[in-house]
Length: 118
Image (cartoon, rainbow, N blue to C red):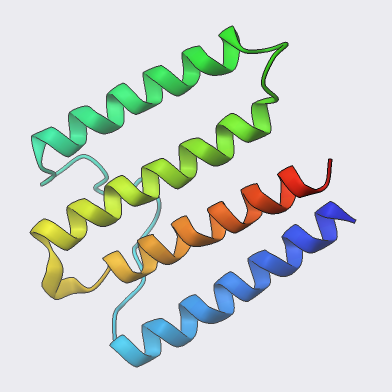
């Protein structure tokens, strides 16, 4: 049942994202890894690298205490909040931060749904 709810959540996310792109007249990114490191603010870039290291260590260190999916959802939520803040501060005219924060909200909703299933 949880997988079905998460799939419905993904469909809702893409529907809202597409309609938001039409309303704001923004183009989708070329890909997740396309120019991911070029032209970035150093503070946010270093923050992302530290975030990757911390969450990788926490996945392996907390194997028996915290389920990995909880750590992964927290990681993607934090990553999207961080990227959205960077886009809002330095690339506000592109309006991409709306989409990044929308993704963060849906990761938070998915995280809450997974926690409520137990």
